Image (cartoon, rainbow, N blue to C red; front, side, top):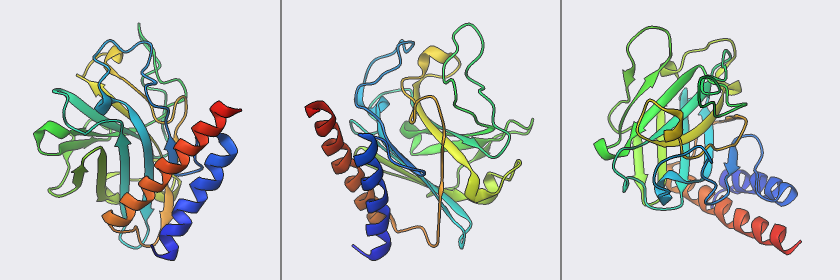
Length: 226
């Protein structure tokens, strides 16, 4: 493991040790089984987020978002994964109507991924224009993990620089109603991406996520012991 990856793993290690389960800045460890009380669907493991992270590669001008679920991704028919991106003008778009959810989750764009359609998905900027399909090869799904890389130009600035973007990840079973959203990572907020040069290769990212998983497990054990 090179120095860059050791630093990526070390930073959340320190934060997780301090907060018993939540990493700083670009990643979050989400409790297993914390389905929303408003969620009306099946509580399948691939709808339960364990870890999520976001990186911005300033050299390549790309974003990489990743997640690990508590079961293999793509086994639940109709499941989709939504990254809500705050590009500077985000609002609590889900915290309205008859069944408000996601207080503190602000976004002004979304990346929607349907894993059962071969990793197909789209970016919606809420600007009145049609959504833009994700390019071929943008998504990698291996077991419980998703890695999504896309050009920063698909998420144009809306009040802040790329390095200051924030995100939240929520799986959902179906589209259209807030009771279809199973989980938020993180809860009641969004977290910032980490600006790096360059973003590590997928195998290195897998090592980083594995490190987050181990530290999150240790932190939860310590929290329970206390």
